[in-house]
Image (tube, rainbow, N blue to C red; front, side):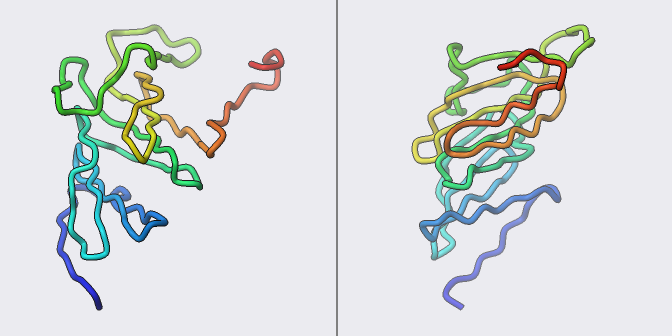
Amino acid sequence: MEAEALWTVHDRARYLWVLKSGRFLLRDRENLELGDATLELKPFLRFPGPLLWMEMDPSQQFLVTNSSEPLAAQKPEDVPSPFTASASTTEDGQKPEGQPELVVRILRRDSGQVMLVSRVRSAVHLPINADGYWRVCAAETAPGC
């Protein structure tokens, strides 16, 4: 054994992602920490609310995150939400009632740069690969969705 550490996690959701470089990401409430072979953790990303889940594309270039964020919760040190990368979605037939509190982001893993932000009303699974994300269209939808 090279190193040992004890971490307390606050829920039963996935909290550890191994990176190809011998490092790893650790999710702890609203933070993502970057760890190394000595198990030393350094702050990587901080979100305005609890980070509910995270996925990476197979090449580990991009992160997709889902966090719970009341609209007024953002602080200066949090992962930014640029307006040009923002969107809001609703389910078919659903009437918008106030601002949704779940936020989906696509970020560059190496820099933490936000590429897309979307406020959603329910959890969203967004499969992603190094070329982008997959769109699922209903059969009756026109070509190109």
